[in-house]
Length: 364
Image (cartoon, rainbow, N blue to C red; front, side, top):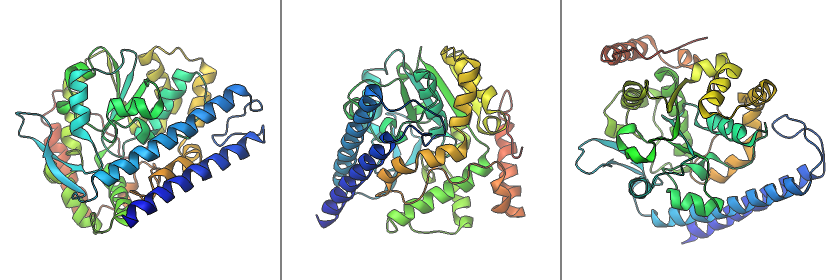
């Protein structure tokens, strides 16, 4: 019980800190945290900030309730998610996958919504912010964490309660085989994938941040052990393996006009060009100037600074940053020759099964 009291206090402190930071922003008409100049705060801006604050408060209460409910559960365990399907994957207890999938089976997402799907550590936050800016027609980032729209953590009905409205942008790491077809059919889906070498490294640091928050449930481990897990079976990996996840979407949806596949590395190399592809896919008809502003506002460095405040709402379960480096080729400083050879062999065997090989980029 003492731990829950501590959680309540921590979440309340975060809300107060957020409110103070927004008040400080209101006192100045200078450049916002995302680097885009705006007019002095007016009634619309005040209303938006009030809505954000209320959303964060509801999200924090929901997160606390969830943590209470799973207080005695193991931190993660292999689970089958689809009735009659023997496949399993490792699911964190914080995730609410069963309820989300049950809701999606009964009721699809709003007809005008966009589903952003990625494997872990593959640009989820980045593309979510881009899609939101395209919808708003404004290159400004809000202070909401992606987890407020994350369907593994919050089922659609709870997301609606947290935001007080239906959303246009939802994010998920669900593999394609788990999603009911009616949840995405006829809706725009943006799938982002990243080369597995950098995913493995980035996911390792993500795991270690989880370990700092919960060392008992996620014991610290050397990279070598984590690398072995990454190349292991689905039940040893969070949300299954990278290989299965990417294969499902690439093999089944690359010719579906409602699906857009985006390569993380290509977004690093040509952000304006890839944002334009997203804009054309969604039909948001952004001007060239807006595309440029969004590219600047969602650069890795700018987003890391802009989202520093909202990330504090996750410190209870994750002590680190979602924006670590975002580099292409960081794997070179972590994988030794033997590990790189094993990864290359796994990729080659996986690509040999593709009717059309998946474009991969390991450096730019």
